[in-house]
Image (cartoon, rainbow, N blue to C red; front, side, top):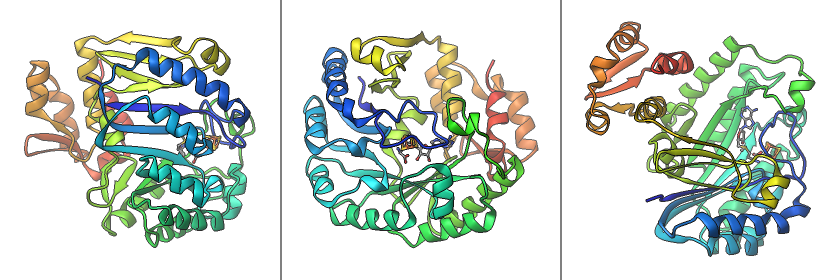
Length: 362
Ligand SMILES: C[S@@+](CC[C@H](N)C(=O)[O-])C[C@H]1O[C@@H](n2cnc3c(N)ncnc32)[C@H](O)[C@@H]1O
Ligand code: SF4
């Protein structure tokens, strides 16, 4: 059974300077893209009951309510399904969002990035601080009470004071969830070919992350995953399916999915996708060992860590014995801890998560 769906919508009004996602395509191709997307869904979806569905992008909030309706009509949506829409502040309009709500969208993920207008401009964003506040008002008025906001830290010219201002401002807003990402300069982005000046170095980024954790944890946000914080009861159920290594469909150009031990990625070229929407760039049948390693990497991102008993039952191994040297090393360094038969990263360990997680991979 596959109970989770990711749908990729690659259109944006303009490409941001730091973005390397398969995104930024002109919305004028929406009609042709939707034809391809519906073909892919009809060919592959097996009518399983869907518990979470996520419209990611790109800018899915550029779609019209009737586009969303046509897509949703293809799925057997469970009663309490979490349906998330990624939204850019400059695309928010009351009537449209009211209709989105009526159609069943019940969670918004708003790309704030920062409240600082000059940093927003430097990032190539189309919105201002004013747009963020007014779009949030509209989103709430339209009936959404589960709203997440995305922040970037480590932006060129940003310092800890500016970041602190951003987070404190966020704490005064009515939001249930906050995601924070350290800015990465990715290949295929404008910043990669035109490196920006005054990029905070790794140490400053680490200090910024520590500051974010402190401010959010002290204000009743649970740090439930490395990059994610939520008010009680508002974890992202969709993203939890990834970290719990559950099956999910990925539909749309460049979408990834995981079904019956197969990880796949659809073609990343939008023209090729529209010509043949069931074409894939990658399809890997995972071995039992690969599945167990994925599960370790993903579970260690979560506050609750790895449930050792469940893991041993599933993979018929003795986890503590197999990974004894690495577990002992990081527990001694106070970067990991064993608690109630769960292995987890400590607050200090989260800062070095990339290095630590790699050591569980053969
Ligand atoms: C898929 S993106 C797009 C969502 C939406 N279109 C927007 O721009 O807000 C989702 C999130 O990924 C993060 N992101 C995108 N590019 C990044 C980069 N180069 N480094 C770190 N985070 C990035 C941003 O915080 C963004 O809100
Ligand atoms: S960051 Fe968001 S709005 Fe900007 S180009 Fe990427 S997907 Fe589009």
